[in-house]
Amino acid sequence: MNFHEFTVRVRYAETDQMGVVYHGNYAAYFEMGRVEWLRNLGLSYKEMEQAGVMLPVVSLTMNYKKPARYDDLLTVRTILKKQHGVKIEFDYEIYSETAELLTTGYSMLVFVDMKTGRPVSPPDYVKEKLNF
Image 1 (spheres, helix red, strand yellow):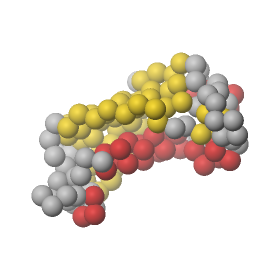
Image 2 (image 1 turned 135 degrees about the vertical axis):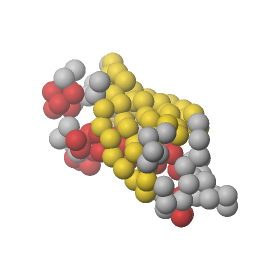
Image 3 (image 1 turned 180 degrees about the horizontal axis):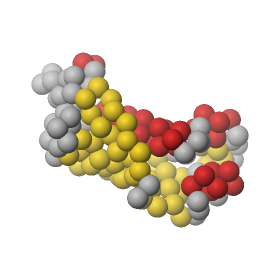
Image 4 (image 1 turned 45 degrees about the vertical axis):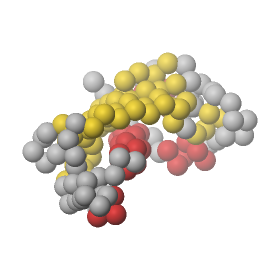
């Protein structure tokens, strides 16, 4: 299984009035996970964009099992689910410090040519790193 993990501490600004991580912030945790997953493979999202390819999210789902709270140290696991054609799919799992599963998620992204705005096949150097 192709996955990467990193940790992040919940900041006060990421919580709501109840001290629970606001639901919209999980999308940011997932994004951090994808960027770190790519970086771990030796790929830079910034360099990919500089080469004219971006990866917009076209589908995102989240399932909340237990709340994360202010100052919790979370482990975000990003898992490559599959890559086919112009699409790449990821699953996510967020765990507490005690290894309790708090949240799961899924996203689909599409490789897009920044000049035309049209879907494109992943660049060859990306395919090589991902063994497509």
